[in-house]
Length: 192
Image 1 (cartoon, one colour):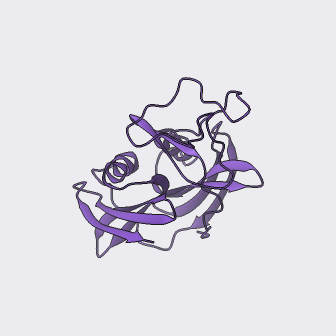
Image 2 (cartoon, rainbow, N blue to C red):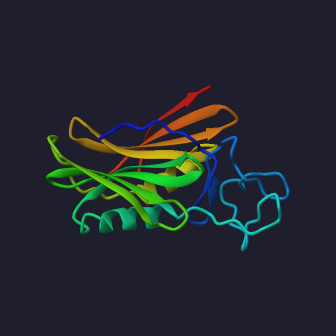
């Protein structure tokens, strides 16, 4: 699959029990001047932008996962989810793997509309099912690391599946590695 760098990172991602976001210069701040509430805060009923008009929040990770899996008839698993901003279009770049193919699916981050689906033959050994979902991994990482959600990717090394969740805050990035079977935090790395 193609490897896209994170273009923009300034949007709040609605997760279970709170809002977390990704910092960027193109962020729309709330009237109080804060782009997103801290971990554990609840989303406002009607988020507002600087002009005082209602703004729409991006889809929750579990909804993005569901919509992407619909594109492969529910027979695959999500490899990674990245929130991207290209030409003022906020979208999720979702990589899905099946037994035989890899898919790169772009979904509008606000509506869930499918923007594109790219497919290629998978030549790698397929991943096995895991006890911890991608949503659970994000929640574990956000409870452990400071900052705003940036990226989550499922990986496998020597037969052991794990998730890498990236967060960022004030120019500092944190990567949390979570065991996909137990939910244990395997490693935390902070880059300044």
